[in-house]
Image (tube, rainbow, N blue to C red; front, top):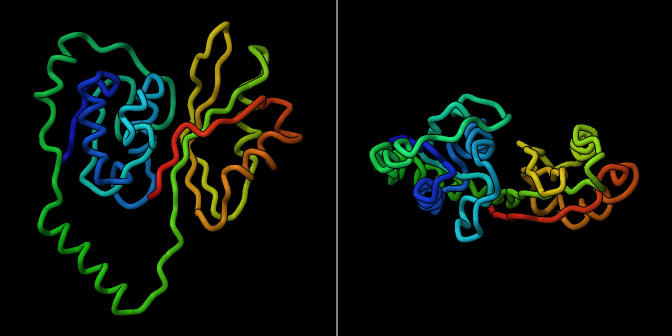
Length: 218
């Protein structure tokens, strides 16, 4: 059953979302989708480090989470967050949660059947994947942030998939960009990606530095 969050930025909703992601790697299904982007863009800023499952940026199997606000819905695409919810909306958070959805017997049976099929076929286990959230910082407040994002996304390699992004105010008119990516661990080194591609020419014309905000095995 779906989990409905009226205001994903409230402490109550963040805790519920953190608990929901405890046993999942994506909001819905088995890979990053528009649902992950919807929840990510609904966050007004990076959640406190105490919500470790939320800061990973993506979640795994389950019926899903729906964010009810003008800021974002499950069907939305990355964009600007909407208006601040009323106190009444925050008070209704508990009422909005239908169920934190333990796996149904059918889902467990399906997962066990898949695992048994893989074991029986003797297939080689797929290389692990990770979801990573990066902070990309410009040189100053005059840096063209659209060009900065284009420079980041222009980096292409096998095993790298760029996801949703958003701008976060830092101060003095400066904004940094936060961007999600999914990597195949055996193919992509995040340190090498930063040092050899994002912080060297031509990308360093716009990028001053990059930091790893969250790194989560999928």
